[in-house]
Every structure is written in C-alpha cells, then in structure tokens.
Image (cartoon, rainbow, N blue to C red; front, side):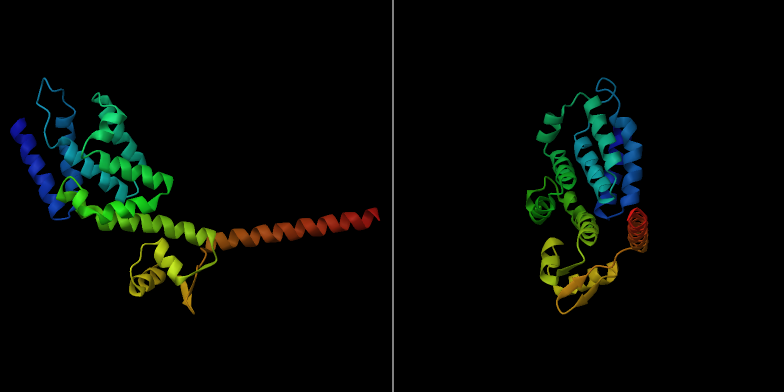
Length: 217
C-alpha cells in the first residue's frame, strides 16, 4: 500500500508541475482512501498535508468554498484542531487565503501571492494566476453592483491591474465602457429588468395614492 500511495503522490505532483488541474484532482481522489486509513494500518505520508493543501488551493480557485470546508472537516476527523492546522506550514496557506476571501480582505491575498518565496513549496506558485483571477472576478462583480462608474486609475488599483493594457482587456471581457478616463459599468439585463419593474411599481402605487387623495378631497 505504501508503494501504491507513493506512486500516486508522484503522479499528483507531476500533474501540478504540468498545470493539469483535472488530472491532479483525479490523483487526489485516488489518494484520499489511503490518507483516511489509520496510522496502525499505513504510516502517515509526509506528503499528505502538502498535497491536500494544494488541493484546497485548487478548490479556492474554482470558487468551491463548500467543498473546501468539507475537506477541512476531514482533518478534524484525523484529530487535528483548527489551531494545529493553522500552525502547519502547508495547511496554513489555504486556510489564511480562505479567511481573507470570506472577509473580503483581497489585499492580503494579493500581498501573499506577490511574496512567492514565502510559500513552503514551489508548487504553491502555480495557483497564483488562478487565485488572482478568482479574487478579481469577485471584486469586479461587487464593483459593477455598487457603482455606475469609476475612474480608470481607481479600477486598476482595486483590481490589482498593473497596466492600461490589462485594464482594457478586463473592461472588454466584462462589457464595460471606457470614456475619457472613466469606466462605466454595464448592468446585467436581469438587473435592469428588475429595476424597471420596481420603478413601474413605485409609479403605479404613487398614482393610486394620488387618486385616493383626490377622492377624499
């Protein structure tokens, strides 16, 4: 069993290094039964926390917070407390990222991604681009819900965009408009329809109230 597990772990690491996320997920699925076995049956693998931490990061890039929490609960089933997991050199990385994302503290995520040398292993760096894209998407959706427009420089700062070229690409992808240094957010059709319906309802109620007042007078 130890040999089989080791072969699967090599395959999982190889898939991460070739940036094959689906293959990596498949290897983790095959490894989980080995990792769930008690230590009396098979010695705990030195690679377990490393590989499962990489898997947790993958879930974060896929916006899989529910699955993320399920996986964390399994560690508690192994007898590990949250405090112990947060002290683990591998597990603390996805746990911190998840907390920052939930809290909307995206600056800390970006800062951590910028300090690659502080990660416990090089494989963590492969998630930088996907994690950044994930938080940019969350921020972008919040911005277009909260604002009608923003100055381009403010948008670049909020979305961690380093150049106008990156900003233009983002603006095009989301269907926004750039005019005289200001980005105008395009609201989704469903949102517009809801707003129109609300406005019509307000007008209808106001007219009804006016008629009632006329009849009283």
